[in-house]
Length: 307
Image (tube, rainbow, N blue to C red; front, side, top):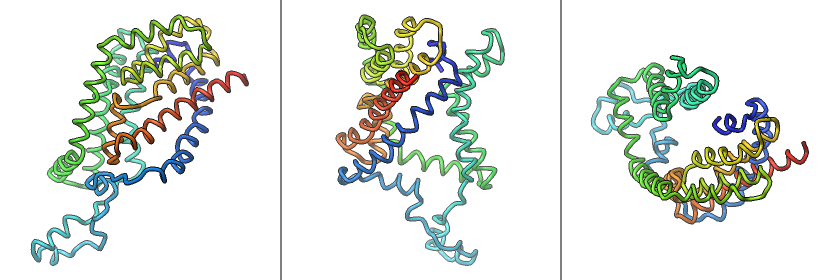
């Protein structure tokens, strides 16, 4: 939304162009690359607690114990505790995931379409703050769990506590990555790259992609890459919008994803969750993100030629 606003791109056209670029990109960077790289990764061992938590492996799969069995002793009580929980319907689960996304999109729309003095805009801006939006998604998920599954508050509290145990180390590592990210941003390296890029004489789509890529790599923030690249290339296309602006939005977005490495929090999340070494994470997370970035640029350039 930031790039579309800064480049005066049409929302509908940008979404259409994005879908056209995304389909072959997702296929090649997803299942095709996965089938090739999977045999070349040896001894990847995800954390056992996470595997159990997300797949239910090791849970008792038999019928529920009868009341007599459940009260027969400590062993029977344990068997009752590990019986599978009723699953949440897929639609509700997907809705819970989309709640934060919807809130952040509403904020972007409000900031674009509503007057600054509007109370509705102020409310949507607050609700769309990333931390507030994620909190809203969490509260929605908790409500769905309590109402649909009929679980008590104590059971929900215990479940939340247990869910934190397996990711506590990952959260600490992500925090460290975020601190490194801020150090890089405060060093001014992003401003230096942006200043050097202004004098480059290359295709505007390639330029937008390259600036977003370099800034994302050096600062560890895709947002910094998108915002800075948009500000630098916007004067080069004027206020006409059209297909070129939409393709440039796609290229900038693609550039911000590439070379996702150790100063990105997402890199550490994937690495630690799947029990990978740095090399294995580079072959998967970094490689996939970079494939998406390069293929996205390639599709944007192809469409610009065909158009």
